Image (cartoon, rainbow, N blue to C red):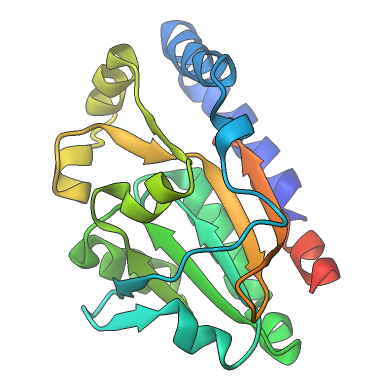
Length: 211
């Protein structure tokens, strides 16, 4: 089953588990985001990806310029280890990691969560690629990917046991939209997938095709 199919299956199951008001609040949040110009202003294919130097799950810094010396970089933003859609995406990327490496590329994931939380995500999903922490969503902000959660959605997440202040180390209630990039060795973005709907992600088969 493709990642796209798995995400749809998860969304259908979530709708059954949390019907009514919860679904309305989540749908309203997506609709509100779609009503903004976030996609129009976000960094896309053809632009230059900025260099970064970010800590991984064991607090060792990883720099984009160093990774690009070895080949292209596949970079995926995710919201946090608390997000089931993100975990599905990370597992699907792990499954194609050997093919990504065969094509001479490096895979990294970036999240606003703290290194302590990313370590839990890496261990839980048995990930063999770097997961980097961007404090206060700074890298995603530089790329125009950050949005603030509506208050009703923050309250709903709280009822689900999702504590963004704990996971990110701030009280901004901000997240990155779903975003995946392929970056060439000259820092040019040769592929970009962006979506306001967090239930949509770049399918690994498409990433491999572009590589």
